[in-house]
Length: 322
Image 1: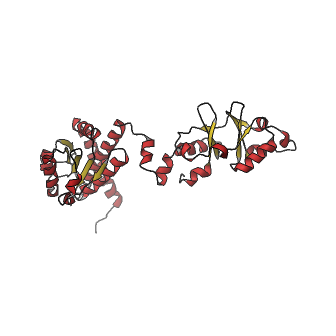
Image 2: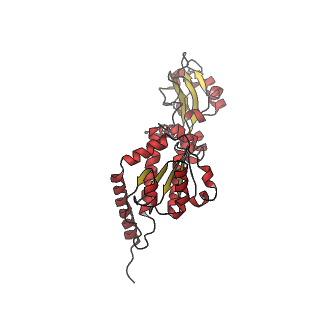
Image 3: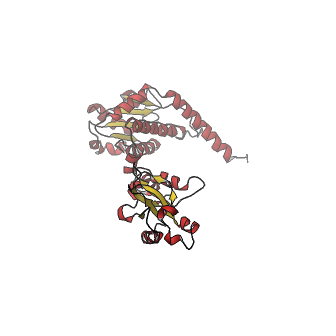
């Protein structure tokens, strides 16, 4: 029995698909830009369709587009022939995927687009195919070598289609100025939703904040810290700006018989690290853990330095950040 090296097989597959992606990058031209302009100006949605492996890619492209601000959904061509064509309106456009461009199940969908003047985008490796000729907008992918040489199973071709779909989604995202905040609207759950939450979304504000004046006695500071349970107290000046912070660590460093008679201003750590209300939760966590000195509380302030809220490390862990 001949020696088989799975690592060699894996590297060969990746090399073949990488060559295909290099060819795809070189092939991108004005046709791609025309598709971006078409989809960006749609009143309706981009309908993605394909059969077999191309169908799986079409589903993924539709999901990526929908989550990045481009209304889109998948329609199975066979189901389209049995009533789902009614889901497609003249305000929509259709993105049909087929490497060969001769997938017979796409026939009714292509005819429907012609009949009702629905813009048709063809993603295929065969410009002279039925799909390539029918499509008013072209997204041609290179007819590259499949990584599974003997069977010619869809491997490189589906990778190229996936990459082309990602390129379309990102181009549209950038064209529309789609922000992380917009993205969060479509991803409220899980770790991604947690990372995209802002400080304002999860901070404790108002009377929940442990705040004390600079002239307050440390006995009052201890009561404030104990009552609010954040392990700290923010010290504000007469203008209401955050002048400093007193933490459990500050108490230990100043421990002595005269501590109770000290003022908050004499014990506080000046110039504490603060955050902005629009900071993403992931950036808040990064701020807390940056540098040699780690912190577990962070005050959120406005443009004038006045405290708007406070976040504890536990708040970030609670929403799923790690």
